[in-house]
Length: 420
Image 1 (cartoon, one colour):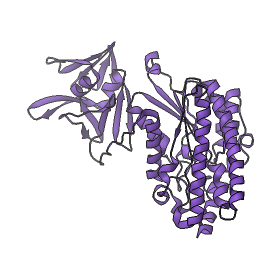
Image 2 (image 1 turned 120 degrees about the vertical axis):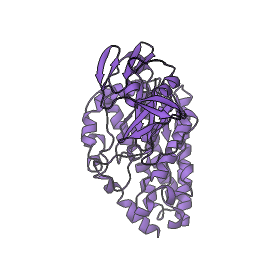
Image 3 (image 1 turned 90 degrees about the horizontal axis):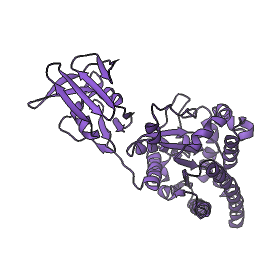
Image 4 (image 1 turned 90 degrees about the vertical axis):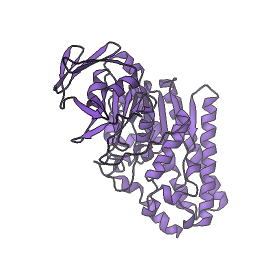
C-alpha cells in the first residue's frame, strides 16, 4: 500500500503548476498619516506552498485561505494589521536562501538562479524574482516574519524510507539536515541583519503519510519528523542565544495520528486541508500572541459580526442587513471607540467627533460631511426603531472610515474588524 502512496506523492510537485499565483508580493499601502503607519502590525510570510496556502484543485484565479490568511485575521483582533505573502510553491531551503540574498542585494533573480525548475512548479516565480528588490523595504519594516520551509527538501525521505536500511536512513537524514541548517541559518542571518527588530517564527515539518499506508514506514517517518523538530529547535535556540527574537511554531506534533483528517493525502496530495491550515494558524497564533481566537462564522443572510479593538460589539442594536448592505447604529460605534456624538433634531443629523476628525451624518442625505468636506455615499443613513427607540443607522464603512479608523472585512468569517 505504501507504494501507492509514494506514486501519488511523486506527482505532488507537478500538481502545483497551475495553482499558485495566489497571494504574491504586494506594495505596502501609503498611509494617510504617520500615526496609522506606526500603529500597523506588519507581517511578512516567507516559504513554500504551505505559506502560499495551496490546496489541490486551485488554479491561478483561486483565493487561498491558508494559515497566513488566518494569521491576518488573528492580527486584526489585536490592531491594524498588514500581511505580505511571499510564499513560492515548490520552494526548497536553497531556493529560499537564494531569494533572500537577492532581496538583501536589491537585485532581480531569474527563476533558474532562484531554484532550477521552480518556474514549472510556480508560474509566479519569474515575477517574484524580478521584484525581489521591492521586498527589501517590506521585510525591513516588518514586525513579524514567518517561515515554512524544508518540506520539499525532506520529501526524498518519504519516497525512499521503505527501501533504506536504518543506517542509510540516518545518513540520508543527516545529509538533508545539514543542508537545512546551512541554508536556514543563512536566511535567518540575512533577515536579522536587514531587520534586527523583527520577530521570526519558523515552523517545523509534519509527516504527511498516515499509519495505514505502512506501519513500519510510518513509525520511521514520525521519528524523522521528531528529529527534524529537534533540528529546528536547535537552529532557533542558537540564534536566540545571540539575541535574535526567534521562536518555533511546533506544527508537526499536531498532525501525528491525524494525517488523514488534516491533509489531502487521500487525494495523493500532502498539503493541509482547511482543518490542517486552521491548526497551523492556531499554533502560529499561540506562538506569537499566546492565544488563538476562533470566532463563530455567521450564516449567510445574517448581519455580519463587528469586532472593535479586539472586542465583539455586543449590543441590543444589532447590525442590519438591507439590500445586501450592512448597517450599524452610530451610537454603538461611538461608544466602542470612545468618540462623542451629538444629535440635532432640527436638521435630523448626528455629529460624531473623534480626535481631530468630525463627521456629520444627516438622515436621508447621500453625502456626509467629513471635517467640513462633503463626501458622497451610496446609501443614506436612516432611522430604525428598536423597541421604543429610534436609532440612526449608517453603512459601517462610512462612519468608520470618516473618523480615520481602519476597517477590514473577512468574508470567510463574515466579520468586520475596526481598529484605531
